[in-house]
Image 1 (spheres, rainbow, N blue to C red):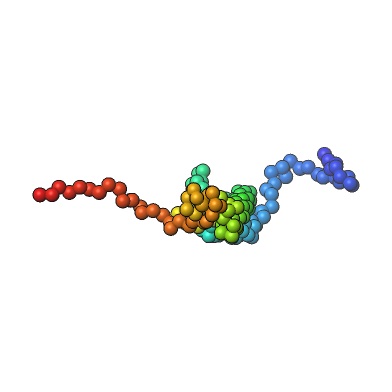
Image 2 (cartoon, rainbow, N blue to C red):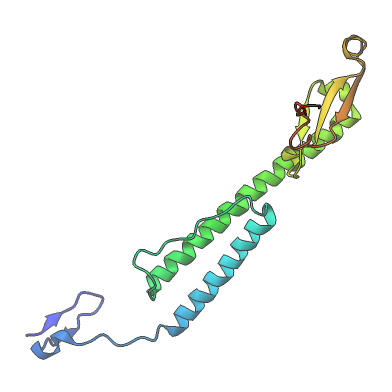
Length: 177
């Protein structure tokens, strides 16, 4: 019995009992898979270079665990992986951009402290605030203690870095004979 399909112009479609289980035409997915794998490789490379260049060793990521071991991903799964990498890359770029903005603002603050120490009394900027390793800091202090505070003699004191690892501590007393 003929059926009429909805649309602009009615068409007649013959429905045969034998054609109920006709296989869908086979589509070659190789070019799409190859393209998605290339995109994923490029995005992973960019994400890896961002992690390594920002702060080596500071941001470690755990490998993604596969639910059922090694397998061939479908096109939809490859697209999800690609989309999650794009999202992760955009988020990492935003975080690094925000951090670079704060670090640059702190470098300018150091310059202002050096130019006019009296306007920045008791302020401290550390190496960590400007994104550098170490324990160095810039601290605005009065020159000659209380007298310097009364006379408004302020200066920027730059620390020499990290103290000794073990410190001097108490010395071991050796018994004398």
